Image (tube, rainbow, N blue to C red; front, side, top):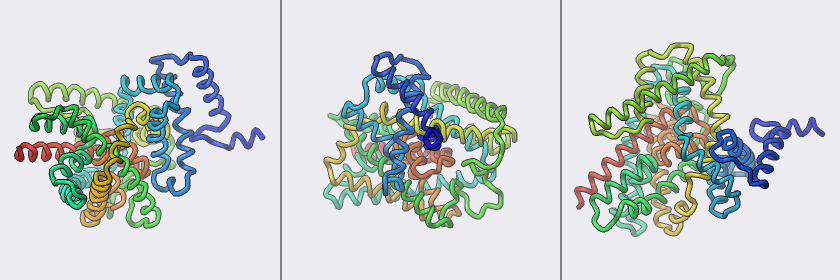
Length: 434
């Protein structure tokens, strides 16, 4: 009997080990002894819930082919918090950890460095330039088709574009919806930043949810039509091999993995410093993630990243994806996903249709454009659809649903550059109309 139980796994953990973890969590909860500001406790709580929810989502028929485990791990906790079905001490512990430790940035930094370090340099250069072209096409087509859909549903072009379509493609909450709210409020009379932000936020959240489902569909399409996907690679007909970041037969070197981790921290130091310098002297606001991405990609393209660190990047990537992604998604659901905001948009069928049509237009445009640009359509569509997600958290959920976490660098390009392009155009156009 014990041997059978050992074969049952919750995530990567044998059932007996998971039960020990669960008992510890229950004891701390029922005795009200859950410590505050304890990183190990916070991570432990997230692990208890995340991998169990992931197993549940992975065994729900139909849903499990549409990124179901990501939907369950991310959005079910938001619902449980809304219903007060998660212990308050658990919510406090997870929320404090997520809001005060910049855990999402840690994840993105390690993942981006791990994936870029393991990429073929020539492929990185060619793929990035083509992704930017695809982004511009998606921005145009998403705007036009989404706005037309709104007009067909009886909305004005003004409301459809500025308050539904543009927020979807703005690149998330902090770097997208917030700048839009500030820009709109500066132009409009009678609406505060808070009013505008509350109006556009539901579109951002539902747009991200639609993108997660579409990423699951793209993954399924890739499974059925292997010629349409590179299984984590963007470039088709590439003579040089792009390392497969999903694992492989290479042995793991602890030293090389640690070096890749230190490289990630070093680049983040540099990004934070450059962010300060650029803001102070050039009066330009560039988020640290985009600076990190630019500096890292430049170093890779110029050949400044040593081979031993490139090898360590592969194992660093694998560790981050398998060990950190599910707990982080659970933390996002508990601490950063407002169920009230999410369900507000369901009160307007017209808004729902515009959101769904806009995200579908982005995905289809990327899919079709990829064929003409020598990219794999499935992988390109998944990466570019991250521009319609909730920033870093949305990209995480979308790539996880599509099983394409290797594409995080290109997802960051989509989120940051695509979002900045949309925000700039939307605020400029609103200024012209007022």
